[in-house]
Length: 465
Image (tube, rainbow, N blue to C red; front, side):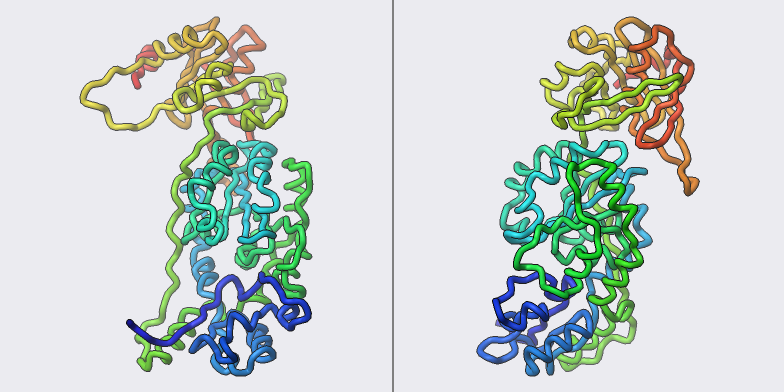
C-alpha cells in the first residue's frame, strides 16, 4: 500500500456551504473543524486554501491545522479563466447560436435547487421562447452519484425533450458555465465561479441552515436579483438587466486569490512535500474541452404567431407548455406519432447519414405529397435541405422553394435561425393569404430573417433523401 502526504485542495472557494452546528464558530467562519482534525490532530499534511480570509479563519479555529496551510488560490477557477477565449467554440458546440444560454446550477443536499424546486427546469423550458433562450443544468457531482443517470433522465424528461442541456460533472460543466449568458443559482459554489468570470446571477435559494452567514456566497446571493414567478422571459430579462457583472466579480475576489499563480504555487507545495525540486518550466492551465452536442433536440413545437403586412412573428414553445398556439409544428420521424397526427406542419431534416448498400430514397416532391396524404390533419409538409434552403408544399399549391437569408447582430456577426421556425412563418402566411409572396419577413427570436419564396425548380423537386 502506497503512503504519502495527504493534501486538502481548495475547491468551490472553500466551504461556501455546510450545515453549521448551533453555537459553534463554524457558522460565522465557514470552516468546520471536523473536516480538518481527527482527535485533535490535523488530517492533512498540507491545507491548500483559496483566499487569505480562509487562512485567518483557520487560525482562529485550529492553529495546528493553520500551521500546515497556505494560500494557493483555486485551480478550478484557473482553468475557467484560461478558457474564456473559447466561449464562441463552446457555444457553437452546444448549438446556442444567438440565443441567450440560461444555466441552472444546483448543489447537493435537501436545500439544493433541484430538491426544493424539482419543477423548475421544465417550467423554464415551458416559459421561455425556444428561439430566444437555451437552457442548461449543472448539478453537483454528489447529486449525479446519488440519483444516477437513468433516474435523472426520467425526472428531467420534459425539460430534456424541450432541449435542456444536462452538463456532465467533469470538465463539461465548466465549459457550459463559460458559454452561459446568465446563471440561476442556489447557494452552491458554482455561483462563485460564475461571478468570477462575470456571468450575471439570479438567486433561487429559499433559505435554510446550510448557507454560511457573512460568507462570500451569502454576500453574492444578497446582491443578486431573485428569481420571480411566473417564469416569463420578461421577468428573466429584467433580472439580468439589473445585474452588474463587475460588482459580482468584486465579490468573487473576496473568495479567490493568486489568480495567474495558482498552479505554480500548488506545484511548489506538492514538490516540497515530496522532497523534490519542481520542473523548471512554468505550469500552464489547460483550456477546457468543448462540450458535447446536446443529446436531445426539440422535435415538436407549439407555435404562436402574429401576422402583419409582409411579416410574421413566431414564438415556439414545447407542446406541453399550456400556452395557446396557432399550430403544432413537428419533425416527422423524430417526434412521437401522437404529435405527428396532431401537427398542422410536418417537416423533415435531411441528414448526412452514410448510404446503405440497399436503399430506397424519397424525392422532395414525392415525400411532401405522401405526408399530406398520410396525415389528414397536416396542412403543410416541408423538407429542410440546409440552414438556408427548404422545400414546402401546402394542400392547395405546388412545391415551393424557401430560401432563408441570415441577419447581422450588433457585433456584425452573421446570425442564422432554425429553418423550421421560418417554415412556421411561411405556413402561417400561406394559410391566411391565397397568393404566394415573393418574400416574407420572419421575426424570430427578436430578429428579422428574410425568406424568398418561389416555385421549386425541377432539380429541387427531384432532390432525394
